[in-house]
Amino acid sequence: MRMLYDALVKYVSLHGDLPRGKDGKVSIEPLGDPEVQKEVGLDSSTLKCPADRNSAKLSHVLNPALSVDDLHRQSATVVACDRAANHFGPHTQNKIRVVLIGDGSRVVMGLPLKQQEEWLRLFLAGDKLACTVTASGGAAGNWTSSRIMWYVGHERGYAPNE
Image (cartoon, rainbow, N blue to C red; front, top):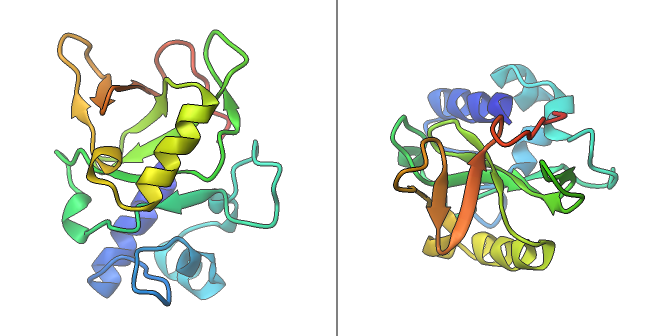
């Protein structure tokens, strides 16, 4: 996902805006174009998570309400996430969703799958509570948003396969 973040930053530097779909909302779909991939130095495999069994769609979705200002060092905006929860939790067989934050951090969601799906619905609707996170007090590297605990990708035994 860090490569996706870097590609978005490069896209913005070249075009002055984020990739947008026909409806004007921020979308990952334009990054599927081979010409755009070449332009931003993105390999098509970056848009496909190895754990994703659904080969019909790209593996990630972008925050449809994202702005250029949301991509910076102190950003707490959720930029992108897995389309589906494809990974397994650190100490459980429960699937988890991998999420990209505006400062380039990759975090994982500490919620049961049903609640993850409800979060995704709100995220795709542009709900402010689902689209932002804050650093949680006393837990270095961890974040919270609307009672959701997020964990930095390399902590708690999580080993990403992307």
